[in-house]
Length: 310
Image (cartoon, rainbow, N blue to C red; front, side, top):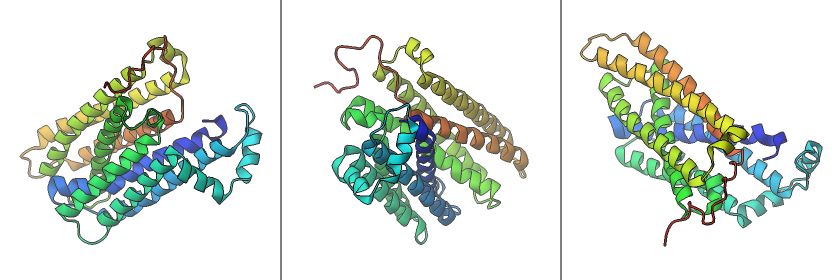
């Protein structure tokens, strides 16, 4: 993406990630604990965040599609941006794979939000909302680099697994953070323990699929060290390590607090705040990566490894 709108695209993607996680969070906690917590406010905030992010992404792609500019001349971008009309957006939505994936993502996202935010949360509504959120995540993944290789490619399926695991973890963490720091106090120690065990598996799946994605891309270590993509990836890994350390400290707190009549919640809240902060940094790094082209394989393989066999 052009430098002039790099941060726009990153912001749009980050808002989309956070919004989809917030929409799915009440449904996830309903399945885990039979309690959705303060779900209406979360769903409303998530809907606004994800919708704004999706609109920013659509605008950025439409701008790229209809702007005759050279990458080093940002003034041409500004002139072309003034000339964009509704017909340009309609053409992107109706005539491109990105546009169809965008529509799938937004429509299922809004449907999931409507089901989660309307009335009392039940297990049936929770599972329906989670399924719709999963379909929305599939559209979101197709809007990224992996979608360029087709929905049947191993690269896209690996990227979808990576995104799904990460967003599910973020959904659970978001509800836990709002419940604790918002003063609701509806989530007890057994529920936190169940989410902690699930979060461990989700993070393991996200890390494994992320490494597999790098392998399928065939990017050499030399290319990663010399390209800005590699440096941003290093920042993402640093944020991930910080998240894991914060999660480990929370697990230690859980282990020492079991059986206590009045556990030290203040210490838990401080550690939870740290994990949520590093999670926000992780989201920003992941969003920035979607705006940077991955470095080419070195050497270029004769047969791409990301295509399914047969």
